[in-house]
Amino acid sequence: MILGITPVDAAFEMMGLHEAQALMRFIFVETLGGKVIFALGFILGLARGLERGNFKGVMVFVVAFFGVWFLGVQPRATVVAPVSAMERNGYQGLSAAELIKKGGYDAVVVNPVFFAVSRGVDALVTGVAAVVDRMGKGGGARGYLASPFLAVKVSLITRAIIGRGITDRALSDAAARFYQQDYWKAVRGLDVETVGLWPGDKRVVAVYKEDARARWGVLRDALYGCVNQEKIFDRMFERFYGAVIDKDAVVQALLEQEMRLRPQAYTRFAYGAPQQVAVEAGAPGVLDAFAWVIVRFYPAAQGLCLLCLWVALPVVMVAALLCRAAGALALWLGLLLAVKGWTVLWVLAAKAAGVLFLLPAMPGSTALWLSPVVNVITATAVLVLPLAGLGVFLLVLNRCHSTRGQA
Image (cartoon, rainbow, N blue to C red; front, side, top):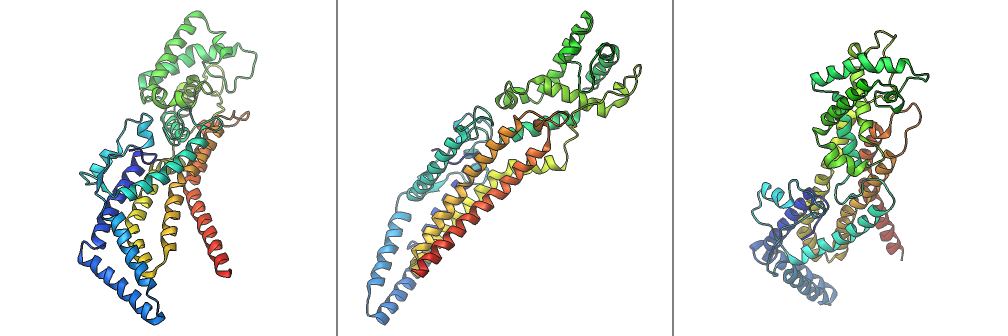
């Protein structure tokens, strides 16, 4: 059963469906509370019928009540094992089924009608999201449905690796020795501005002596391994950056960060002041932490809202029956569609971030894939867009209600 985008929101929604089924059985007929609700609605309808001389309302209430009972309570429960879109696309982390068990549910029992409504809305939203996800370039070939906000995650992991510098002291010392013994001598002979050049620049490599070129090859492979310890290239880097940003770009930024962390070791003692660097990577700070929290935990926010909506459904149905207000159910369904529709808004934000990250940096400026700016803007969009979407929904609903009242 495919449901939701991430295992987190799929698990929360299944928990909500389970609780909705339990509340339906508690509220309608099968308990004393259900009998009281039926009696109260029947008496209210009868009183209005006596007052107006028309008992149509009583009959409507009885039919509606037992219709709800027949659709919402009577159907045999179904035990469902959900699979999110990410799991379907190859995600191998914690599954929705495992999260449900961690939440204390040995099995999830749902009403087939409610589950059909959930899957119908989910299919509509996921279909629109998939169409948007395939539009244009950026965000990775696998797309949002396989790994939401991949661009931001890769950027944050890359910045964290670069911000720490070379953690292996022996490798850091080897890099410093290469600068002192080979790099500075090579750039001294270049008739070009050396700001921004690094040991792997083609112009620098071309003037290395044969033994220095061999030492650089060994050092570069070791630096690849240093970065690859967190499997950034194997698991995410190649999927997003591809051929646009190669591994050397990360190694260059890593060495420039090392020069900031250990300026004395990398200073050009023999030829003047320390080498100037163009990219200001910096250590990950508050901005990166903000982006990490928002991007990693936004599925839980959506899942919790879905859980609350499903838990509230039985109460909404009781209110609609007693007050004969079908609009309450329409409002609830609209809210369900609006909350699930956050996915489409987040796909748009993720696609925009993917495109921005791949834009070439302006001369003398920080590359966007190494900057916290786009990460923070994207994380802010994750917070603001859902609220804006709900605001638009409520505004349209208010306009429709006002127009109906004037008519």
